[in-house]
Length: 221
Image 1 (cartoon, rainbow, N blue to C red):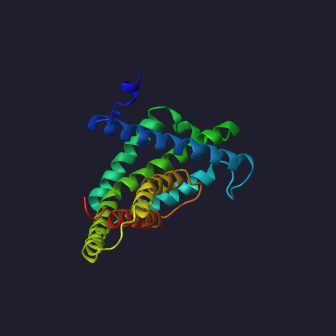
Image 2 (cartoon, rainbow, N blue to C red; image 1 turned 90 degrees about the vertical axis):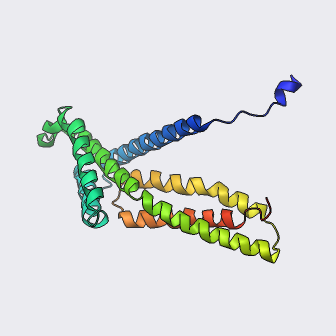
Image 3 (cartoon, helix red, strand yellow; image 1 turned 60 degrees about the horizontal axis):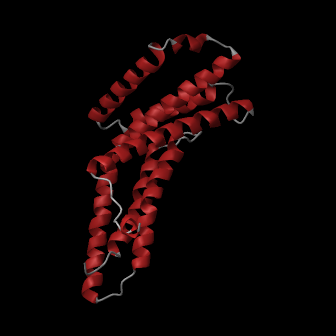
């Protein structure tokens, strides 16, 4: 028994890590869609929104789509065409192929909740595509933070500064939550959020903790 307990824990390989990452992404997406629909339906039931029935969700969708196409992707034709292609395909398979297109002309009370859910799913798709298109921005800014952190680490090494494992470990611990939590909040937000605000937050705040973890990494390996 003691020999079995002393065996080192087997870590997942590259395929296992990739599978865990894919499962995590789908889990975040499903949770965000579920939260978005529940919040929207609660808003309709308790009359939280200024617009009645499904029109609040439709208004959010129109605003997000206009921001994505007009502001965020207007200067990049490749991203804009890719965005339109993905969105048209998702609309075709989710609305037309399922026969839900007739709901837009139906005023039944239950139908309003279905329409609200459809618009919310489309909002999540738009926001998700914007996040994917913003990945190069995240990468470039994190390269900047890592490079500057390595420079600070080298200065600490040359000046003989004291080690601070506390700062390193706690900074590293906050990186993933500060990336994942804003994404969930954005995808499930019942209000329109401009993509630039989200990109700045997710790039700068986690990037600062990346800088801290690199700058306070061990000077001597």
